[in-house]
Every structure is written in C-alpha cells, then in structure tokens.
Image 1 (cartoon, one colour):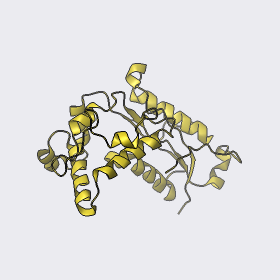
Image 2 (spheres, helix red, strand yellow; image 1 turned 120 degrees about the vertical axis):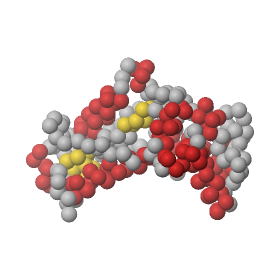
Image 3 (tube, one colour; image 1 turned 90 degrees about the vertical axis):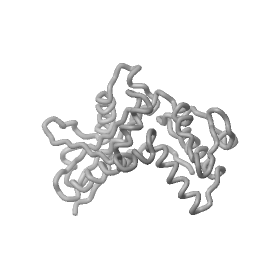
Image 4 (spheres, helix red, strand yellow; image 1 turned 180 degrees about the horizontal axis):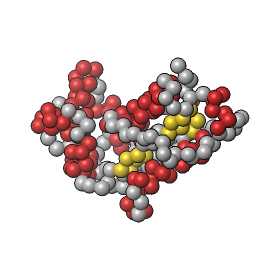
Length: 234
C-alpha cells in the first residue's frame, strides 16, 4: 500500500456572488484548482487525463478525497486533484430544496415530509435526539452561537461578518423563531427567508500525492517553508 500525502490546497471566498460577478461555477472551479496547484508547486498538466464526478449529498467532498486517496494507495495514479464546488442561488428556495432532496430516499420521504424535505427531516432528527438525550432549546441556541463564532475566525466564511450573541440566539423574534417541541422543531420557512441570498459555496481543493520520494523529480516540493493555517478554536 502506497503512502498518501496532501501537497496543497486552495479555497475561494464563500461570500462571493458569482452571478453578480458575471461568472459561473466553472470559473470558480478553475480558480480554486489553480490555487491548489500553485500551493502544491506542481506543473498543471491536466489536459487529456481522466476525470470523474462523485455524488454523495453532504458527504460528496469527503468521498472525493477518500476516493482519490484510495486510487493512490492502490497504485492507479501518482497525483490526484480533488475539486468540489457548489452554487445554490440559481433557483427559488422551494425548487432548490427539492433538488437537494433528491439525495435522500426521495420517493419514500418526499410524501412524508413534503416541501423543504431536508429541513423537516433534520428537524425530525433533532426531535429524536431531544427525546433520547433530553436536549433543550438552550442547547440548540448554543450550537447556533458556536457556529457563527467559528465563522468569524475564517476570513473566507460566508457569515464571517455576522454578529450573533448567545443572548440573541436564545431570543424569539420575527427573524429568530422559537422551537416548539415536538410539533414544530424548526420553522423552516422563516429560517429560509432569513438565509442570505448571496450564498455560494466552494470546498477545499487538496492535491494528493502517492510518495514524496518517488514524485520528487517531477515537481518542486516546498522544503522547510511553514504552512499557512487558520487558527481554529473551540
């Protein structure tokens, strides 16, 4: 089994609105891919090599990285470029939620949950968790507050400029409706109405390589240079 190394990566700004920039998802894929290749210090010889798509809903990125690593471990390829991108503002929230819902057991779960299937499904999961472990509204408010706090630590996060205090997350208002257990775990329509419209998402773009020793003649490795990482805190 061959060793696998991540040589580089690149990300784009999650807060950008591609439509206002006159760009498509293709442009952002190219931009992120170039950043990863430059970070890895390798030659961008991509023309004529095989490519494939992976689809696994919210797990697509993780599956792609794992698949690329397995190809290298198995000796099929020496270097793999994994690119993930997503854009969710080219259709209405209702239509978009229906498209995303296709990743679930659509024909069985759509009749049960109706429109906005995933928000309702996640609400049901939250309800089961609450009933089993005794979680409260205060616990869920802390999750929202924690997520926003982490976003402020990431200069590329969509919600990096949003201010959400724990007190605000715990309050009931027109923009922050309360949870009602067990009937209405999540007021999905209100949640979607308050979601920023300029929402585009791009994932990490790691360059995965089989063996540093074997590939050294083919590209220049960054020797002794410190990596740039975001300071994540919990």
